[in-house]
Length: 198
Image 1 (cartoon, rainbow, N blue to C red):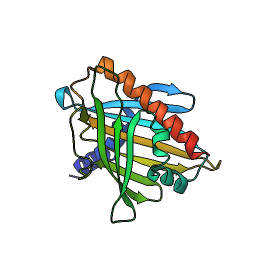
Image 2 (cartoon, rainbow, N blue to C red):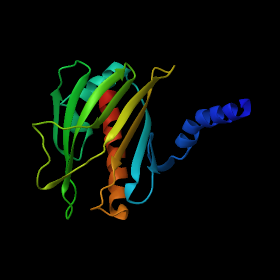
Image 3 (cartoon, rainbow, N blue to C red):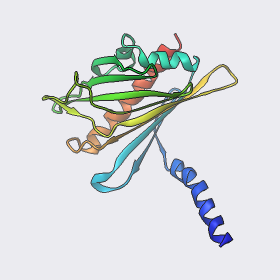
Image 4 (cartoon, helix red, strand yellow):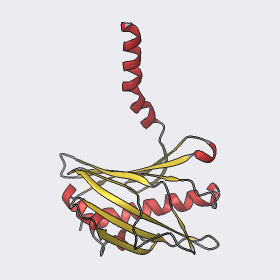
């Protein structure tokens, strides 16, 4: 009995380590590192991306940038539309983004709900907002969820880990979508870092 409990405990404790180890580096640009993994298989596969970088800014400044509707379009360079809407709770807000996608594909958009979980973590996920319903001429990204994790370093820098998962877009083949997704995310995080350090 004790051996069975010990084996179960080891499996539970090592599961997060095994899960995190399957990320693979797919792109590096300067000091932005982009990792990817697919969770599940076939049509149910979900892409999870992780961007890691250092920022010379503190966590409150990073969170202020996330909530700033004026600076949002500057770190989302492929955004055709970018809105931030308040929510009743002070640590909660909504974000609508419409992305310009090259022809012959439709634009993509998403509506996200953000929650500050702690001074060092912000979580987001797909949400509905009456002002931004799905519409014609664009594809609504679904199953979006992720988080921003900030880890202060002794050097005065903060290590940012940005995670995002989305349902697979079956209209775009991976050979076409992967370079767009990777390049856009690296460009977005590069712009975010530059703005956060100003």
